[in-house]
Image (tube, rainbow, N blue to C red):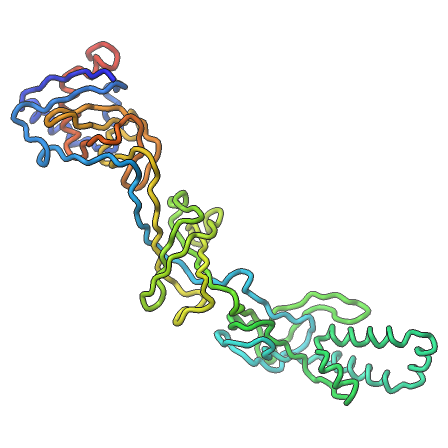
Amino acid sequence: MPIKPVWALPVVLLALAMPALVHAHGDSGAFSQSAEHSREASEVRLPPGARDAGDVIMLAAVRADAPARRLKTYGQIVPDAEAVLDINTVVSGQVVQVFVRPGDSVRKGQPIVSIFNPEFITTQKGYLQFLQNEERLQVLREEGRLPDYLKDAKENLRWWGMSDRQITALIDKGTVVENIVLDAPAEGFVTDMFVQPGSLINAGDRTMKQFVVIGKSVARMVSGKQSLWVEGYVYADQEALLRPGIKVEVILPGGKRVQRPIAQVVPGIDPRTQRARFLLDLGLNSVPGMASGQTVELELALDGRAGTWVPRQSVLGQKVDPVVYVQAAPGRYLRTPVTVLGETEDWLRVAGVDARARVVVDGKMILEGVYRMSGNHAAAGDGHHH
């Protein structure tokens, strides 16, 4: 790459340039408004006697990859979607008893609520009367329809929620079940109760003639055999940083830390929180002192990416005609145009700079002033002085 030298200027010119440079910022395109930038590197030399490195000029090394950094945020404990179970009833009636409360641990088959429905009792008594009607039974035997009829009658009782044990007791002993009891379908803990004693439930038609099942949830639980998950949150403008596989540290109650990869990035921004979301599988069924809905601290380990990276502070005019000052020797610097290819919060990925170079982070405005007062920048841009 050809190099255009800029000869040393008196120290007094450097001093005169300072007030004008104070108003410019290193992360702006202000200089592009006054002159066009050359796409070739130009050498700039500090005036003789000017203090250099460590005082006026501060340098930083170019990196071959972006430095990994940690992003602190928070999340909430949530159950695995497959672990959330609704305890439903397809029988209308009135709630007689509620046997559990939210937060209770339950075992599979443990009673949750009992419901009274007069039609349920009528159905059982009608079945007993049928079994006692020997004349009717004999007719069905002769027609060969008795086995199917008995089978359908038992199925009807099962539709009402009776167990095989209860049906056997009804047939053998005439024991009528007064209330329909809904049991826990799995081991776990109750998260919500939607009814209380005395509540009326309209679950839809449950008769044989009009078999319409609508159903209604009376409680919700989380299976204890499924692992807990964490729903994490970051600001909307940080969504691009998220991707499956990124390691995240979860700080559990008591200070214990576990590291888990992002399992899923939830598409879109949550309209309620205005945050981007991601999910982690804790791989734990339970954690002492932690429950669903609890807030936990998270730290994301954002990996570096390969390429040539310079500190954001070293780039002038980052949006328009970006340039960096590369040290060629003490007191000598190359004003080097670059192309910005990517960015993190503190670093820019660029093309046009050697990966072994050292770039100016503090003092670049002074060098830019020296470069512009030389008049060579105009000649480099279009061959004319302005």
